[in-house]
Length: 194
Image 1 (cartoon, rainbow, N blue to C red):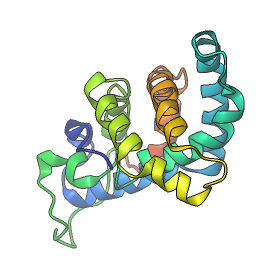
Image 2: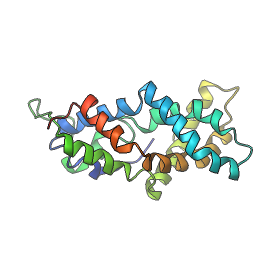
Image 3: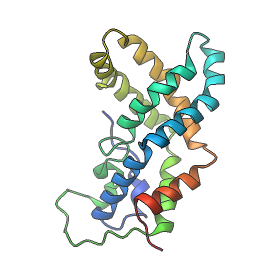
């Protein structure tokens, strides 16, 4: 669905492709934990719904976030989306045939720095444009409609992406607990070392 994103985001946290692979899988898993999905969807509703409802009073913003974010996050923050190793760590030129004995220990400081750095791209106009195109016409809305043809209108899905996604990504970039969230990801899921 998406073009290559944020190649520099992994550069310092991963010295080799095995480390990059481990970090990308850990990040995708962490971003999509059910508890995180629920917490983030509430945060997004609280931070973006006032603006959305002011500009689009017909939107049922809080209700939308309860179901919408899980689907979006699962597609976006995955190892085939934002955290796709080949593009995320393009500086390492990963092929998938790396040495099995490569060091997989990720430095905690570097992990945190890279996770916070990649979040700075969450509201980059070029990335958002590519992501919107992918969601609108790359199979996402079509997949939702196929799964629930009675309740999903293709045009409504595509329109909602332009309303919700850019504001959501801006809110995620500015999340007040972003550093803490990434520190937890690095220590608990990427099992970084000091």
